[in-house]
Length: 557
Image (cartoon, rainbow, N blue to C red; front, top):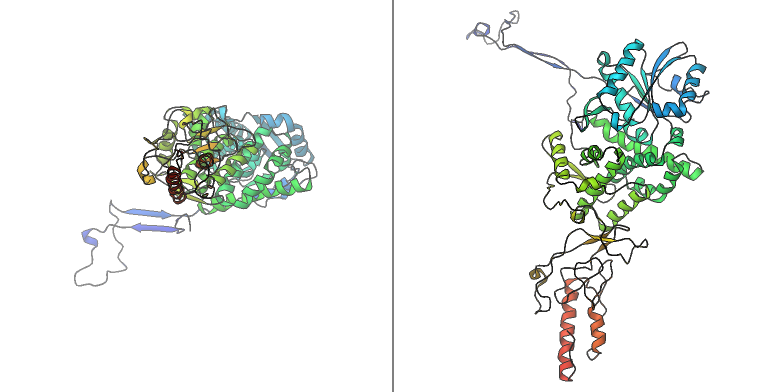
């Protein structure tokens, strides 16, 4: 198995024999009828396996009176008339849908005790767990036949699941998520927990619900920001495991966000159903072989390396999915700098984030030492290694353990996330600004005699447009040793040379000797595409200069 868990069972008795139990030297086989004496140093090993089985059931209009999915939709958790249930509901959901929920239970003759509970990250603490345990105890729940129902977002299902796993050492429960992040992420796994001492989900258990019932109609009253919050988790699995799902988000993400994934048209309904089903399948495909996380390299941890600390430090300004998006933007840029993701792919990822209404930066990242502290915390709970998932292209991933905080700055201009500067990008249709991710190092004197490009000591000063993600490679490519050159994002400016922001342009073809110096000067303004062409152009200009001197023409420098 991928989790490397040995599924063996049995009781193994280890007896450390005393001298009196040893066979006689004349006897090759000990007497089987003789029972060895159990000394004080005897030991036992117990191996047992607990079967885990839970269901994820989809249904539209779950609390419509004529819908019986809650009664017979799950064979392991049936509900019949005359029974009773404890129902813990998010207070916001109760205000919007409480009457419909109560009407459904009354119509099917189920005695439901409704407990409304505030559930958000600010109150995701032990006090909320204690309130649920008090309600279960007051209800006098029969832990064998009366599962608790949790109706709400991911925070509420985490709290109720944690309380159920503790009460009477395990009480069954059902999840009915009402947010998109609950539908595609929190509602399909087995982890429960609450925050503790400024730590995200620091206290919790592994406790699978008997069943999770998914209903997209809950999203009709969901705030668009919370829809974006859930789409961050969809984007996470798409970037790690499915280029097709990413392309679907790229094509229809904005429309799905505006439609709240309700499917107001047949095309949007098909796209919304595909997004939800595919993201759940990809998540379960990753979780099932490794439910207890015995294997710590999990690609679904993408976006969850720095985000726990970012989210808790920015609370309540950032939602969970928004903090994950900031983490994904950061690690996508790290992947680009390492060459795992191309410039164009990185630009597509950041563009899709903006289409889905997700942030790529938060001011909390400017706090000194925040990212280094988050990385250290991650290493502690990943068994001493980073196991940091990075994207490889779109739809692939790899794990690294060598990310350091060297070069991380407390200022926004040098942070790994592109940040605005006071110059414009000529390529981006939105006329956004360029931002330098690394400062350029100017050569000592670029007008001296030609040397190999590696000898100039010049480093690449890459710039990225925050609007379109386009990398400006014309600022200071290392192959140009002859002339100073600048673009709108470069620290060096020149009144006579100005390269446009975009990929390095190809040089014009060398023109015959004898052309005017003005033509030669125009030719020197173009960017070079390779060091070979750069040297060829230099020799062309040198030959032109010699020819010009023979005709008493002043050469152009």
